[in-house]
Length: 319
Length: 274
Image 1 (cartoon, rainbow over the protein chains, first blue to last red):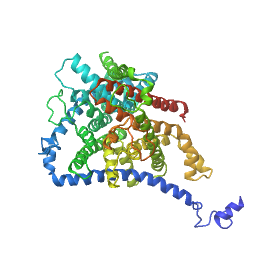
Image 2 (image 1 turned 90 degrees about the vertical axis):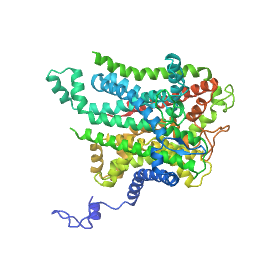
Image 3 (image 1 turned 60 degrees about the horizontal axis):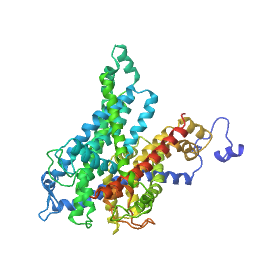
Image 4 (image 1 turned 120 degrees about the vertical axis):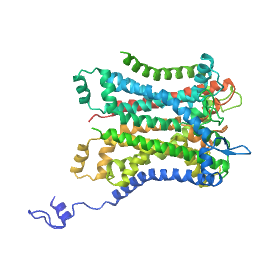
């Protein structure tokens, strides 16, 4: 023991306390410093990824916009990148994306919130323990399988055979409906977290004033968890805008402005998936078009994510 | 009362669709769910076609993805959770960034990998390492987030106790905190890899939709994966190929359910409540 003290202090320690200037940090450990550096590098890599995404999208996009004016791209109403008289108006792609997103949200928001309320406010812990993993399975189904289901069953059997709707082989309706089911777990799980985070005291207070469970849920818990719920919905929008395989399979590949959900239409992601199939030469206008649409998609989802993170933060700080 | 019925209904819709999906796909694919699916190569006629290269390709890509992304994701999570000073703007930027990356559409990661490979002058972009790269970046944020949650659930008393005995910060993390959070890290990693296994969009951009009639055999080998094979067969007009797509979907869903079940099993069996 004495040996250690002598070594650490350099001389014997007097009872009155350590000498001024004694090092307490311990000896230097180059191995640990190296490990910390490696760990930090791994974290920094996430930033590198983001910068990489931006650069990877920006460089081809810039050469795209050197040939096609930005305004023509954003507000043009004809999308025909492969025709002889090529036209790069992105509005048709945006219209199909908008349709599938809106339809998906019409499914996912009410049912997702219903499931969240059920799990957070009504289900017994035991029921919840069974139901939640089952909901997670819904989130684990590969989107290509959802796409197959949308095309074969929802579009082919339900819409055409059972409901006799005047629709072709593809429709944005079928894609949107199935996409909505896919997003239910996302919305349910985040809003459930937000509702569970509302303190029990608020519920007891409401019950003490004579409110029943539904009144408590709708007028106390729901408003208190609203920012979390908004965050869930915004994240749902971002998922719907970025989803690829369902729309690539079931929504069709004709890029026209969609005015009716029974029509087919090509979304932004659908275009990227389809165009990537035709092997386009690196640096060609066709190749650059992919990245221009990708950049637009990335910016839209980035905006949505920031809004969603903002709202999540607000509901966490509320109590 | 009506409210309660509505709530049950919303759960019922979710589970009803799930059940319908499983039943219709099982019914469609039952006839083709045979050994041939595992042993045969794709072919122009549905009678003789199988998914052997896709199965092997999926295995190659997911294994490579795991090797690339697990050490990296866990290391980044340890840095953020145990070492980083959370008040510094740079670390907060990293955290915000990870949250953001988790919600970037999968297809964008495909474009990133495509741009990266083009930059390296790689001619044939449909190689195992390229697909694994895209999928690694896709699931990296998922692994970081779940690992951090695992680390966070280890109580501070463990760290304080270890430090009080004279262990260094890294010794504490390596010998106490990490072993204690292995179950939740494993759970998160399995779920992340199962997501990568089902993902098709980024690989589609990298040109994985090809006619492969050989076994993929290395990092530079061409490949196709199960989701891509399903996509391919879905797009054919003949009914037989749709049955094959359904049978392959059953296979893929089976593997994913097994992985999910394993994750839930690990979570319930080994996770400590402190």
